[in-house]
Image 1 (cartoon, rainbow, N blue to C red):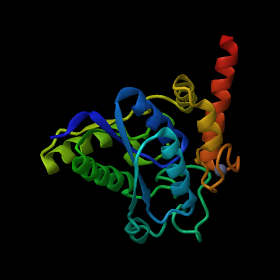
Image 2: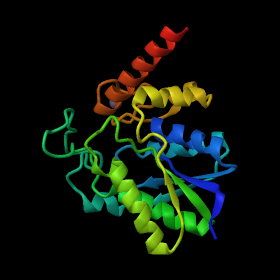
Image 3: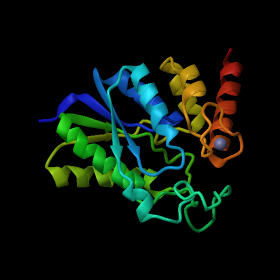
Image 4: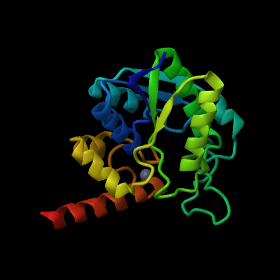
Length: 223
Ligand code: ZN
């Protein structure tokens, strides 16, 4: 029997999933996190996720799934020899896309949630600043929710608090949750593995910075 008061957050220690972690804490009394070691370039992600979860008082499970990088060799996030796409190609996802990543993450998270008796599963995917990753779309998450429930005969509820908000609103949410500084200074979003404001020039830093500037502009206008 799954407990509706419990949630599992798919957590990477980045801006989005850290905001989701604190959002989950504001919604449910019992929150857990799961993070994946999947052959990513910057395995320090896992250390950052572990530190942030400890600070949030949330138990974390680190799951090793090295087959992800073995499956897909043409991804710039798992293969150092490939230069990262800085501009999204018109007809295909950028080479920072890890095929199947969210499919595996969410499926493994659901099996783990079942083991822990957790009904709610939270992921920080967003369709708003669409990165070209098909597995960040709402239709995918809804479809997978149905599949997971059928696969395990359970009633999981997948939550995507960031699905329809942009990066500026994600900063606003972190601020409302009282973790703006923590998210800004401590999370790792940068594709080059630099925490906080990051390297400043990879596509991920670019998106994060534009959102932050937009949020600070809105915030200062309100004062
Ligand atoms: Zn960067």
